[in-house]
Image 1 (cartoon, rainbow, N blue to C red):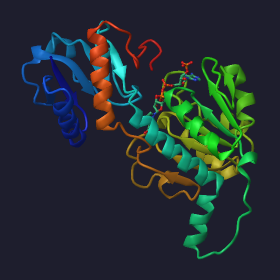
Image 2: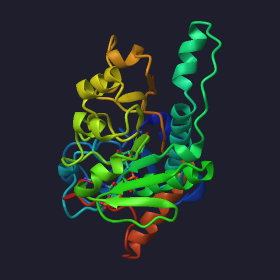
Image 3: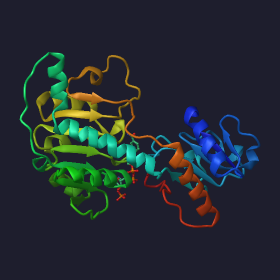
Length: 308
Ligand code: NDP
């Protein structure tokens, strides 16, 4: 019952160590050292290899090593093999830290202070109390909800928007496309934590920016293609947006000379908001394997028709 890992190799070595510790009887192999392909029952991958079905005739389950699966060509995984994404707690913990940092950076004018420091300008900026800064989160899944839970502690009025209705204590929730304008009209800082699907590609566009309160801040930790680049730059230039923290871009990495690198109103990080943590991810994978063997329901099962 071999588990085969095909993703970041440095972290793969850590996975191997935790596997050896916690499941010494389960052979764990790092791609491309696949051993006997017929023995591979479980595959953990960022992107799947070609010809999965032909190469691994006894494959039972595939894990996406990330929380999102848009990078994963799901057509490569035969329909009868379940695909499970990472619901391990390390991803949420690191995402909560990042979004908290980004929201506070926008809330407390960090982009202005970086600019002032470069120019040796000592100038106070009037502080807006948190209770007057409304934060709206798009996508109320695993990560959106974890982020809102932490943001509560700062006293921001909180809003959420999601495909299906959600009830979250202390958060005014909106559902569906019809409710989007009402949600946007109140989001002084907008956080995108949506999965990338045909419905959400390009959702951060001119029409959306125009519906935000003037001078709103944007945090994109979803995926680069959520954002329409030309509309975004125009919104920054016009003052519709006052600043943005972007962890994801299209393409990644950004090419040299791209306008995001040097824009004074953009704080850019290299798709680094959160990361699958080998320690907790190995526990998650072992738990899912045990559930699978007992024929139980699998948390994190990807709905391939929906795309997430
Ligand atoms: P989940 O699947 O748990 O949550 C996604 C949420 O988005 C669901 O609540 C879903 O609603 C909602 N949603 C989906 N489509 C739409 C739509 N068209 N309109 C409104 N709401 C919609 O995912 P996670 O919270 O685990 O992750 C979210 C995304 O974060 C990932 O897909 C990935 O793109 C990104 N991510 C980024 C990372 C980074 O480092 N920058 C790291 C990890 C993830 P419903 O349940 O009703 O379908």
